Length: 439
Ligand SMILES: O=C(O)C1=C[C@@H](OP(=O)(O)O)[C@@H](O)[C@H](O)C1
Ligand SMILES: C=C(OP(=O)(O)O)C(=O)O
Image (cartoon, rainbow, N blue to C red; front, side, top):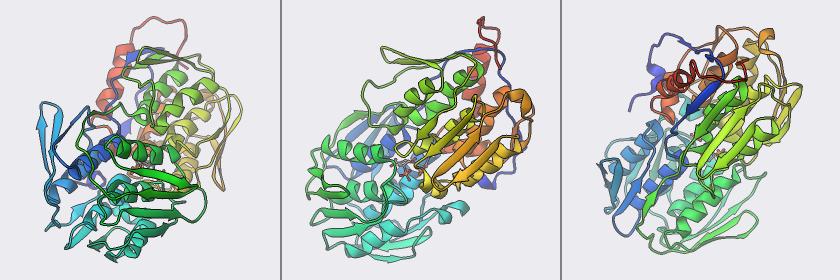
């Protein structure tokens, strides 16, 4: 699958808001749920179906990776049917792209095979931390060459106990737990290090395992046990990606008017659900009517202090909104996002800075001084191959003329046609009446 970074694209001119927004946006399926559902179906005791799965680069990479291990995945009119098979080491390298869920969730699957599996990825993939999960696999008996992408994993496992430092990513824990029931002796995993970030994602992992009959528990703070046993096949529906919805809902908060996202779950383990509270605290109206979440902007954003340790994926969107708030805001609890698709703290300081925003990195976040759009100016922003840095340009461009982005294609990591979805949100809003003006 091609690395969007190799594209030579013309800069993407971020469209201005045509006035107050008035749109309903169907947000694609959750990346985190889709990639867990695919993997668990591939390790299950029978055939499963997945409805509402995300179709984007990260999910296609997961699908291709699992197929390379022998799994059969058929698309039946939008529902994926997954037929597990005896796992075998792929003959070709498995491409992880820039997907954390692929580079952290598939090496434990490789460790279930007797042969060797080579993992490769995009140019930026080798900058992402992967050492701790590979070290844990070594402790469990796998042979591993390399400490980041590219690396090679040779099974099979013999041990049950491992120690991991998951302060760099919750995915180190999730990756091991997801395959843990298929390890010959199960898994007894202890975290040693600073706080584990993105905790809701570990909860999602445990919940999805339990829904499939696996015995898994956090027996003490940072200590998980998975009993060996079958993973039950299930027919499941994936929720919309609540983190992906943030850029669309944030558009209403910033430009005025309202944006609705249907399919909002009443209960969820997605950390992205936090966007509701964040937008409310920043002054937007937020209402859930049945399963339709609507955010209405008041054209004034309040500065807030936000601990995003549980929902760190929201940082780029929230930081951009803070750039337009009525005072100084802070984001904390996200030191580890220096190891996301790019160093997001540095990237946000640089790119928002290009627009004239005063942003400073702190040890675990950002301090952002809000400005009126009229006091900022357009610039060519860089995405650093990071889909969520592209969302920064899209949001800022709604209210600041002349914002461009070097690489819109990188949004395909989690949304296949971001440009189309963004433009139809704005086109649906053009000419719509509203009392609130776009800023
Ligand atoms: O398990 C998952 O699906 C994810 C966990 C989180 O990773 P980190 O713990 O590295 O933040 C999140 O940011 C990422 O987008 C998806
Ligand atoms: C950190 C993210 O992705 P990944 O799953 O690649 O870690 C993200 O989507 O914000």
